[in-house]
Length: 114
Length: 113
Image 1 (tube, chains in turn orange, green):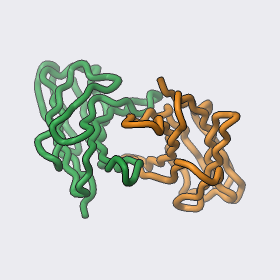
Image 2 (cartoon, helix red, strand yellow; image 1 turned 90 degrees about the vertical axis):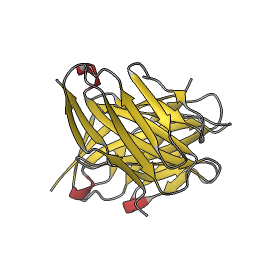
Image 3 (cartoon, one colour; image 1 turned 45 degrees about the horizontal axis):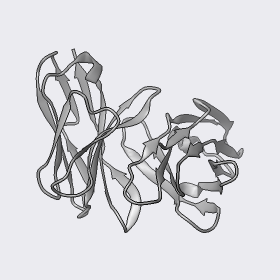
Image 4 (cartoon, chains in turn blue, purple; image 1 turned 90 degrees about the horizontal axis):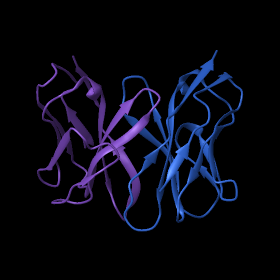
Protein backbone atom coordinates (compact mmCIF):
# COMPACT_ATOMS: atom_id res chain seq x y z
CA UNK A 1 0.00 0.00 0.00
CA UNK A 2 1.15 3.53 -0.67
CA UNK A 3 0.68 6.53 1.61
CA UNK A 4 1.56 10.19 1.95
CA UNK A 5 1.95 12.29 5.08
CA UNK A 6 1.86 16.07 5.24
CA UNK A 7 2.67 16.71 8.89
CA UNK A 8 1.63 20.38 8.96
CA UNK A 9 -1.98 21.49 8.57
CA UNK A 10 -0.81 25.06 8.08
CA UNK A 11 2.43 26.87 7.35
CA UNK A 12 2.79 30.59 7.98
CA UNK A 13 5.55 32.63 6.38
CA UNK A 14 6.22 36.31 5.75
CA UNK A 15 6.44 37.59 2.20
CA UNK A 16 10.01 37.49 0.92
CA UNK A 17 11.05 34.69 3.27
CA UNK A 18 11.81 31.16 2.10
CA UNK A 19 9.07 28.57 2.50
CA UNK A 20 9.02 24.81 2.94
CA UNK A 21 6.00 22.53 2.86
CA UNK A 22 6.82 19.03 4.07
CA UNK A 23 5.84 15.68 2.57
CA UNK A 24 6.89 12.11 3.35
CA UNK A 25 5.76 9.04 1.47
CA UNK A 26 5.66 5.27 1.47
CA UNK A 27 5.49 3.04 -1.63
CA UNK A 28 6.57 -0.50 -2.34
CA UNK A 29 8.41 0.30 -5.56
CA UNK A 30 10.04 3.40 -6.98
CA UNK A 31 7.91 6.48 -6.32
CA UNK A 32 6.38 8.94 -8.71
CA UNK A 33 5.85 12.10 -6.64
CA UNK A 34 3.74 15.17 -7.34
CA UNK A 35 2.82 18.52 -5.88
CA UNK A 36 -0.49 20.21 -6.66
CA UNK A 37 -1.85 23.60 -5.58
CA UNK A 38 -5.48 24.53 -5.01
CA UNK A 39 -6.63 28.14 -4.88
CA UNK A 40 -9.98 28.92 -3.20
CA UNK A 41 -12.99 27.48 -5.04
CA UNK A 42 -10.79 26.08 -7.82
CA UNK A 43 -9.60 22.69 -8.98
CA UNK A 44 -6.12 21.33 -8.41
CA UNK A 45 -3.28 22.64 -10.54
CA UNK A 46 -0.15 20.60 -11.20
CA UNK A 47 3.05 22.22 -9.87
CA UNK A 48 5.85 19.71 -10.36
CA UNK A 49 6.76 16.03 -10.38
CA UNK A 50 9.62 13.66 -9.67
CA UNK A 51 9.87 10.57 -11.81
CA UNK A 52 13.58 9.84 -12.02
CA UNK A 53 16.87 11.65 -12.38
CA UNK A 54 17.96 14.84 -10.62
CA UNK A 55 16.77 14.97 -7.03
CA UNK A 56 15.98 18.69 -7.27
CA UNK A 57 12.93 19.29 -9.39
CA UNK A 58 11.85 22.72 -10.59
CA UNK A 59 8.25 23.54 -11.33
CA UNK A 60 5.75 26.30 -11.95
CA UNK A 61 5.66 29.72 -10.22
CA UNK A 62 9.25 29.40 -8.90
CA UNK A 63 8.56 26.32 -6.78
CA UNK A 64 10.98 23.44 -6.46
CA UNK A 65 11.05 20.17 -4.54
CA UNK A 66 13.82 17.93 -3.33
CA UNK A 67 13.51 14.17 -3.52
CA UNK A 68 15.33 12.41 -0.67
CA UNK A 69 15.18 8.64 -1.02
CA UNK A 70 16.81 7.81 2.32
CA UNK A 71 14.36 10.01 4.23
CA UNK A 72 11.44 9.16 1.90
CA UNK A 73 10.67 12.86 1.63
CA UNK A 74 9.67 15.26 -1.12
CA UNK A 75 9.52 18.72 0.44
CA UNK A 76 8.21 21.68 -1.55
CA UNK A 77 10.30 24.86 -1.40
CA UNK A 78 10.45 28.39 -2.70
CA UNK A 79 13.28 30.84 -2.01
CA UNK A 80 11.06 33.91 -1.63
CA UNK A 81 7.36 33.64 -0.82
CA UNK A 82 4.66 35.83 -2.35
CA UNK A 83 1.29 36.70 -0.84
CA UNK A 84 -0.23 35.19 -3.97
CA UNK A 85 1.31 31.81 -3.04
CA UNK A 86 -1.26 31.50 -0.26
CA UNK A 87 -3.23 28.37 -1.11
CA UNK A 88 -3.76 24.72 -0.22
CA UNK A 89 -0.92 22.41 -1.29
CA UNK A 90 -1.21 18.68 -1.83
CA UNK A 91 1.54 16.11 -2.12
CA UNK A 92 0.71 12.88 -3.98
CA UNK A 93 2.47 9.60 -4.69
CA UNK A 94 2.03 6.57 -6.90
CA UNK A 95 4.03 3.44 -7.45
CA UNK A 96 6.16 3.76 -10.56
CA UNK A 97 5.64 0.16 -11.56
CA UNK A 98 2.69 -0.73 -13.73
CA UNK A 99 -0.65 1.02 -13.53
CA UNK A 100 -1.28 2.67 -10.19
CA UNK A 101 -3.57 5.35 -8.83
CA UNK A 102 -2.51 8.47 -6.96
CA UNK A 103 -2.66 8.74 -3.19
CA UNK A 104 -2.94 12.27 -1.86
CA UNK A 105 -1.87 13.77 1.42
CA UNK A 106 -4.39 15.68 3.52
CA UNK A 107 -3.07 19.02 2.32
CA UNK A 108 -1.17 21.92 3.89
CA UNK A 109 -2.55 25.44 3.92
CA UNK A 110 0.16 27.97 3.16
CA UNK A 111 -0.47 31.50 4.41
CA UNK A 112 1.93 34.21 3.31
CA UNK A 113 1.58 37.47 5.20
CA UNK A 114 2.50 40.86 3.69
CA UNK B 1 -8.67 23.00 -25.42
CA UNK B 2 -11.10 23.20 -22.52
CA UNK B 3 -9.22 20.48 -20.61
CA UNK B 4 -11.46 18.74 -18.06
CA UNK B 5 -14.98 20.11 -17.67
CA UNK B 6 -17.56 19.23 -15.02
CA UNK B 7 -21.26 19.91 -14.71
CA UNK B 8 -22.99 21.13 -12.67
CA UNK B 9 -20.81 23.49 -10.62
CA UNK B 10 -23.20 23.46 -7.66
CA UNK B 11 -26.05 21.18 -6.63
CA UNK B 12 -28.33 20.85 -3.62
CA UNK B 13 -30.16 17.56 -3.11
CA UNK B 14 -32.54 16.18 -0.54
CA UNK B 15 -31.75 12.89 1.14
CA UNK B 16 -32.80 10.02 -1.10
CA UNK B 17 -32.69 11.95 -4.37
CA UNK B 18 -30.50 10.80 -7.21
CA UNK B 19 -28.26 12.70 -9.59
CA UNK B 20 -25.45 12.28 -12.07
CA UNK B 21 -22.28 14.35 -12.15
CA UNK B 22 -20.87 14.76 -15.63
CA UNK B 23 -17.22 14.94 -16.63
CA UNK B 24 -15.63 15.32 -20.06
CA UNK B 25 -12.07 15.78 -21.27
CA UNK B 26 -10.81 16.84 -24.67
CA UNK B 27 -7.16 15.81 -24.27
CA UNK B 28 -7.64 12.30 -25.67
CA UNK B 29 -6.62 10.82 -22.32
CA UNK B 30 -7.17 7.15 -21.63
CA UNK B 31 -7.63 7.25 -17.85
CA UNK B 32 -10.23 9.16 -15.88
CA UNK B 33 -10.88 9.51 -12.14
CA UNK B 34 -13.47 10.69 -9.66
CA UNK B 35 -12.40 12.09 -6.28
CA UNK B 36 -14.16 13.65 -3.36
CA UNK B 37 -12.58 16.36 -1.22
CA UNK B 38 -13.57 16.82 2.41
CA UNK B 39 -11.96 19.20 4.92
CA UNK B 40 -8.93 17.62 6.60
CA UNK B 41 -9.25 14.48 4.47
CA UNK B 42 -7.44 15.47 1.30
CA UNK B 43 -8.68 13.90 -1.92
CA UNK B 44 -10.03 10.37 -1.83
CA UNK B 45 -10.51 8.28 -4.93
CA UNK B 46 -14.06 7.08 -5.52
CA UNK B 47 -13.80 5.26 -8.85
CA UNK B 48 -11.50 5.28 -11.82
CA UNK B 49 -11.42 4.12 -15.39
CA UNK B 50 -7.98 3.06 -16.59
CA UNK B 51 -9.18 2.93 -20.18
CA UNK B 52 -12.39 3.07 -22.16
CA UNK B 53 -14.60 0.13 -21.23
CA UNK B 54 -13.13 -0.47 -17.78
CA UNK B 55 -13.99 0.88 -14.35
CA UNK B 56 -12.60 0.07 -10.91
CA UNK B 57 -13.36 0.94 -7.32
CA UNK B 58 -11.16 3.35 -5.45
CA UNK B 59 -10.88 4.02 -1.74
CA UNK B 60 -14.48 5.17 -1.07
CA UNK B 61 -16.86 3.67 -3.69
CA UNK B 62 -19.89 2.94 -1.49
CA UNK B 63 -23.01 4.84 -2.53
CA UNK B 64 -21.69 5.67 -6.00
CA UNK B 65 -21.75 4.20 -9.49
CA UNK B 66 -19.85 5.27 -12.59
CA UNK B 67 -20.17 4.98 -16.34
CA UNK B 68 -17.38 5.42 -18.87
CA UNK B 69 -19.63 6.48 -21.68
CA UNK B 70 -16.84 6.84 -24.24
CA UNK B 71 -13.22 7.94 -24.22
CA UNK B 72 -14.18 11.54 -23.45
CA UNK B 73 -16.85 11.15 -20.79
CA UNK B 74 -16.94 9.62 -17.31
CA UNK B 75 -20.03 10.16 -15.16
CA UNK B 76 -20.60 9.63 -11.44
CA UNK B 77 -24.06 8.70 -10.16
CA UNK B 78 -25.51 8.95 -6.69
CA UNK B 79 -28.54 6.66 -6.62
CA UNK B 80 -29.86 7.69 -3.21
CA UNK B 81 -28.03 10.69 -1.82
CA UNK B 82 -27.10 10.86 1.85
CA UNK B 83 -25.85 13.81 3.94
CA UNK B 84 -22.47 12.03 4.22
CA UNK B 85 -22.06 12.57 0.48
CA UNK B 86 -21.96 16.33 0.94
CA UNK B 87 -18.58 17.15 -0.56
CA UNK B 88 -16.70 18.70 -3.44
CA UNK B 89 -16.27 16.27 -6.31
CA UNK B 90 -13.39 16.45 -8.75
CA UNK B 91 -12.89 14.64 -12.00
CA UNK B 92 -9.39 14.14 -13.41
CA UNK B 93 -7.74 12.52 -16.42
CA UNK B 94 -4.31 11.46 -17.59
CA UNK B 95 -2.62 9.60 -20.40
CA UNK B 96 -0.63 6.64 -19.05
CA UNK B 97 2.77 6.24 -20.60
CA UNK B 98 3.11 9.82 -21.74
CA UNK B 99 2.59 12.31 -18.93
CA UNK B 100 2.06 10.74 -15.51
CA UNK B 101 0.39 13.74 -13.85
CA UNK B 102 -3.37 14.07 -13.66
CA UNK B 103 -5.33 17.07 -14.92
CA UNK B 104 -8.27 18.19 -12.81
CA UNK B 105 -11.65 19.74 -13.53
CA UNK B 106 -13.01 22.73 -11.59
CA UNK B 107 -15.16 20.61 -9.27
CA UNK B 108 -18.82 20.18 -8.32
CA UNK B 109 -19.92 21.35 -4.90
CA UNK B 110 -22.71 19.04 -3.70
CA UNK B 111 -24.85 19.57 -0.62
CA UNK B 112 -27.24 16.87 0.56
CA UNK B 113 -29.85 18.04 3.06
